[in-house]
Image (cartoon, rainbow over all chains, first blue to last red; front, side, top):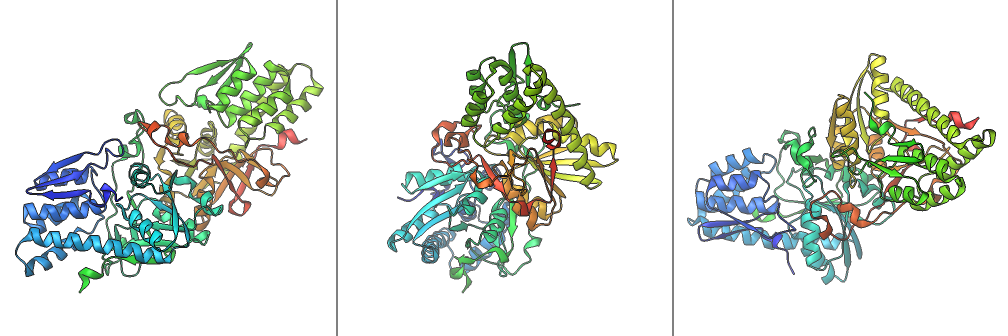
Length: 300
Length: 300
């Protein structure tokens, strides 16, 4: 059973339906969007993220037509993700074929195929009993990985950092793995070291919002810390990447989100001021054992 | 201005008043306790912890008289803390003097003096602008440290890990420093690495529930992770200790608390199963730059 998070954003006629990830796991609700402004609002409020923002970008381009305007406003709203790259890809494909909707559907299908391919590649590297530590949410890709492991006669248990402050680990990953009957445990982000020390996990798998050709990645805040700990405990650390770019990763604008969000999901949260909240961190290549790439298809 | 957390438990006549730390920062409420059973209940529910449990132990002994029974039942309820040591101390002093209440009052006063002394000692080691990363709650001792720094012409800002799952950092430390007008920022536990990397913090201060003479400490889950990160970034890591004992620290029973507590303080938390929750971790001596001791007084 796949996860609704595999395709959290859908295009139907002239409406985009965005799975409201901030309501999960309590409610599976879709927000209807059909303007650039509406798309920017759900993006800014993190109603969708990760693969969802890729889909939202493409579908917004189908409706709004002006790819450059979509890219620049999306980038303003969530500066860390590489929307320019998506725009380039889309424009390249669109040059060959006129109908943007058709182009986007083809790209999305390829994406899906490549995510499954990436999952199989990674599954091949994992031990027979993979006790996987992970963070945030990989939009159903853990389920692909689990299925690939099963096909290879391997098994897996996932240990998921709750991923404060938005709790994507608890709200999304726990939810999607649970409903697919895949063994999963939640831990607080500060408990990773003890799990590693006790040998409870034997690999780490993380996604990435950005990466460069050197191998540095940018991903959800907390990833860097896991990487340092994994290196200390000699645990392999795998990064799922896409579109690695020839850039200095330090040049990328790391999004600083509002401090009130640190108190989200906590009772009576409005009464607490004073927090810091860098939404992502950088993990240098030296910490990464292997990079599982999805990018091949768009390169040639 | 000191913190109510400096003395979270008080003895008045034949009643113990326990500051309910689980209600903070929303409500400053005291629970009246006057039996061993009542004391064990507030202890088990973590209504008080750290220095509060020291005070609760002593005052329960005053009311209940049977020191050994208090120690063994307290230990059963919260196995990681060294209640045996408190019992030994109390019995040693009580041998010289008959009135247990008077003995306890004297011990508590000494404790207070020694905590201030310990804070001064540590303040002497800190830089002129101390940007302190800390975790959990030190029962007002950060305020002593801040005052000591000020007296030395130094200043400080505290960066406090929110300390999931109980959020003692947010609920207690942020609250007590804020009301004392001391500069403070909250971070999610997974954000420590980026702060260290960016040079935003230049020292780490943690408490300890237990320690041995080798220098290993046991403290709130998350401490070990901070220690590994601090070592990686060459940031001094100071541990406040008391009663270091000649033991193998691995022999100490690390409390495993109920998984439902991982979802505490989170909306609709009852719907989320499957977590792990070791309540403490061990930080080996190699990670600790210096140990600031309070134990001298009871040794001779």
